[in-house]
Length: 450
Ligand SMILES: [Zn+2]
Image (cartoon, rainbow, N blue to C red):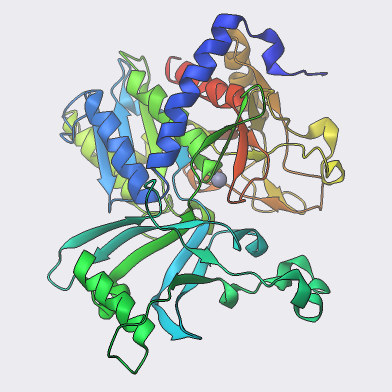
């Protein structure tokens, strides 16, 4: 059961292919920091690979409310035999602006936020931030916003207390309480509007928003503006073997999935790729994996094949499907090894990690893949030379987590979690191994080729 670094099995050419793949991945990370931007990049790539919105075609995709994408490739076998599904999510932990966010205090314009997903709040202060999103105007027009990414763009930040003054207020507190949610307040401006007495700094900002985006203060109510780290994806390590970037949970699975589905040609089984939203807050909502969008899409596909898509047909298709729930795992942290049970943990650079079950405290909330299906996937990975490992998230009773797997498992399909292991997972700057990302691509491709 002893495993080793996947790099040891790679030739010079392999390493070149891995590094080349990483360049495309980093570009995706920079262009797709929000779910809406990810949808845009994904649909562009799908369209470029011959996918069509017409469900009677062999390569079909559909978009749900600009936040979720599904892509289907018709196989030679009957769809009633089920699909090969790979699902990844495209939302990531971040700070959302509140609906009435803007105020002025101590001569500064500030924005209130409500965080989205599991973050360690202290990691979001004193670092450069960007604002991405949309404003829906009263007349229905959509204004796209992206500030903080261009080389010359301003960035934003959340102030932290100087160490000289944090002794009583912060230093003795628990890490989770030192920065409160309501204190995640974004610094937005400081110039006063000439000739204005009341809230001149806020008024200056409002004037700029009006001039630049045609936006009023009321328009914040009908906006979705997300505060994300302003960093670009970068190589990490002198040998450039790793990648540091925001949002790798779960773009580290979503991007390999995108390349895999785009390259599927003439498969035997019918293939489905799902890029889901809202995983980080429980897969709820109209764009989470729990919504009926999957069934609506399958209805269209089955109808598009000239078959009758009644409820029993769709149920049967889903029941006989096989799925990979592609999501990240927490790699063994070199300096906090005590939270892992190292015999059953995942390691950076040891390839795609198969996780039979997630959950917490006695597997609660886990989908727990059947041994028969685990064996099938292991056989596939071994037969196709995929570098893979197995690992669970942390020691028993240390904590835990969940994925979308259980929400697809309710249909009765076989599903197992797998994906790359990250360091600094859910931080503003997550670290992946280039090898692991590439092995995900190879694994998803092999799964579609069964
Ligand atoms: Zn995730």
